[in-house]
Image 1 (spheres, rainbow, N blue to C red):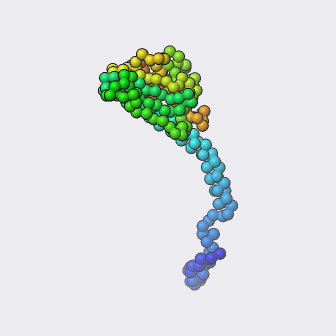
Image 2: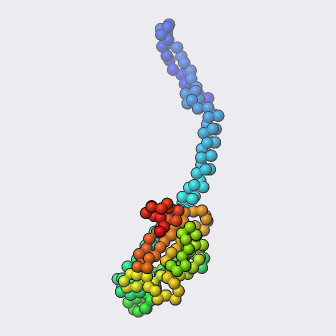
Image 3: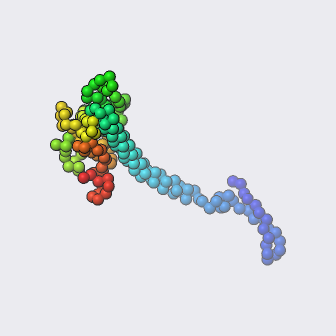
Length: 211
C-alpha cells in the first residue's frame, strides 16, 4: 500500500522530522466498519422494496380513479352539449378497466361509438360495480367483475337516465389484481350525474371519506 510523508517541525529540538502515514489511517474506516454499513444498507433496502411496491400499486389505483372520473364527467358534458343521451359502457366480466361512449339515438350527428378505451394486454387495475338499489356497505369490497359489464346513461340535462335495460350503476370499486391489500378507492355516481371518488379507509370527517 502507498504511504504519505510530511516534514514536521519538532519544537523541542528545533529540527524537522519526517512523519509517515498510511491512507487507511487517514480515511479512518476499517474493513469491519465497511461490512457493517453494507449489511445495514441491505437490510434497509430489503425492508423498503415491499413498501415501494405497495406505493406504486396505490398510485396506479389513484390514477385509474382519476381517469374514470374524467371519462364519466366528459360523457356527461357531451350529453349536455349534444342535447342527447350518451351511454357509457363500463368494464367486462373480468373487471378490466375498459369503457366506451355511444349515442343512444344513433344519427349522422351522433354515432354509435364516440370514444372507447380497450386494453391489450389488460392492466393491473380491476373494477367491480353495483347499482344504487343493491349497493353494499363501503367496508364490503366489490370483487373484480361484479356487476360488469354495466351501463351509465346521461340525459341531455346531465342527470343519470333511468331508461336502461338494467339498473344504472352508482358505485365502482377500484382494486389491484396483484395486491388485495392495496388501497381501494370507490367512484360514486349520483342520480343528478355528479361523480366523485371516496376512500373507504378514510376516517369520518375527512373530505375523502365515503358517505
